[in-house]
Image (cartoon, rainbow, N blue to C red; front, top):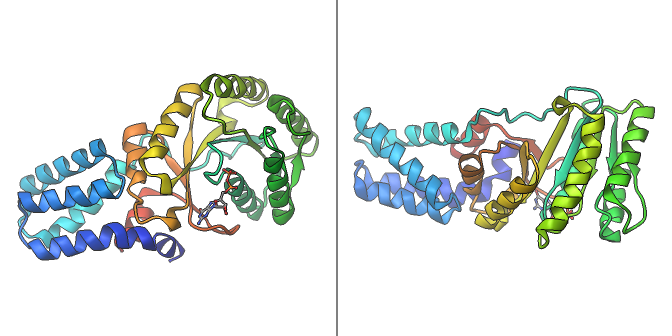
Length: 299
Ligand code: GDP
């Protein structure tokens, strides 16, 4: 129900439109497919993903001899779930103790907020969490993360503005070890305008983490803002080039009617969405699962 509420704009933006088109056309024909294509494109599903979905709809409805548009609704759900289901799991990989979550993303996408929400969720599961204020580029980023650490009630390791991110994270690892921490969540700076800097910085951080954590205990999450639509896909492509992303946190889904970008992330980037942000509060973070998501949209 909470998911449904968080997705209400996207429900209005996509599903209500799909339903009214299905109702208007009644019979499955090429015109109906064109209308559906239009809805997907305008909801930021991306051209390639939209084409793939429509092609599959066309082929499958023929194969199954679906002629009434009412029946098409079920097929649409089925195809969307399939598009969202990747080989890699949508679950956060944090069962090892200690585990580390490296959080990357451009400024303003909701990185700090998401870290706070994840910490809150993990703490709620009885885990001991430490935050590392690795975005040392802006003093405000360190302050914001500290506010969240107080709000959630977890420790934070921070250095001065301008300090070396890898050094902060190294310190945080030592602290995590000495305090029997289950999960270390590391913030990083999100200056995308300089790819070389980003690569150097994340490369250094990755080396520090690799020394201390096995691949199985390490998760790199990219935070993307759903309201930026296909821009988010461009950001993801750059981050994918410089680091190994295990999952996406898609924020601000509550603030857009164009949640179709979630399809694009799965289909074009082949990265599982693991968490979605549906509000500004501590509790407004949901685990992502293709079935629940599509059912909340169409349910
Ligand atoms: P950062 O610069 O990436 O660390 O971004 P912040 O975490 O500071 O978030 C930027 C703004 O987006 C803040 O006003 C947050 O409250 C807001 N925000 C973050 N996540 C969500 C979300 O899921 N939904 C909504 N509506 N707002 C969000």
